[in-house]
Image (cartoon, rainbow, N blue to C red):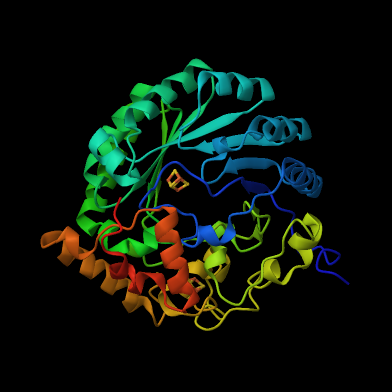
Length: 398
Ligand code: SF4
Ligand code: SF4
């Protein structure tokens, strides 16, 4: 009897189609794998259409198009139209670069439901520094065009030590742009953000102040704009229920067709991810080792295995457990019941110290670009965790 026949696995709700790892920006906190240059092939239009049809037939209802920058694909409108006709709720997750009025017209015509536009900050200086591009003015123009075309808009801004003091200005910017939603996403330390953790990690004081600002605005503006404040999990004592549980609701498909239970799962060792080019989406979801590995509770070690809270957080995040403890089956060390919780406390303590006496040149930011990706990929191939080697890339700033 298969897992699906037993009726214990619910179908996916979310399909995230990562159309390409190519991107005109070079964000210091990019969530793409640091070795994205190892996975540069892309599915064809027909292959993506096949994925959408199979996932919808399985029960997926929400469809996100992301990347990299999904607008770099000429067939985005074709895929949006297909997704909409299949009955998906469609969302474009974009930096805005390339979102001309002509493409907005075409996306409207194709039936796109929603747009999420990212900013790096409310100031031109920081927005352009963190993305290593001059894109602030263009993003402002794009935000206006999105609203002029009648799309509901989420403004997304990743928060860290540099821009947490600007949270009030970021909210003002979202209100002025008419965004219906603002996602203030405290940095999650995976991918490029993990490589730049020493630079990006805020202090507890910065976070407390920012959260108080968000609360004040929520009371003041009511329902005008819904503000989400994604928790900074290094500062918590319980982990997040990552992806609402492994293989529970989320199905990601990377540009080359690898199917992923979470978009950073590629960083985990010992897992071979099935590809939509040679395995059906149904078999990937219900039968593959990669999707079944951390489902349920049988894989857990202590203290999670016998913990009464395991149904609440599913033991936290597998990628974080691996990055901080070396074993993806350990409890997420954000949890204060984890024997590795000290690791998280030490990172936060170091950040507080560094905020007082920070020498930026000691930890140069490693911007996301092909050259740095190849260098980090080479370090990974040698089995060296990327965060131990960021200093090797000194001088690689753009
Ligand atoms: S985080 Fe920045 S660099 Fe990464 S895909 Fe998004 S816009 Fe591009
Ligand atoms: S021990 Fe594991 S299951 Fe229990 S609260 Fe911590 S992370 Fe969650």
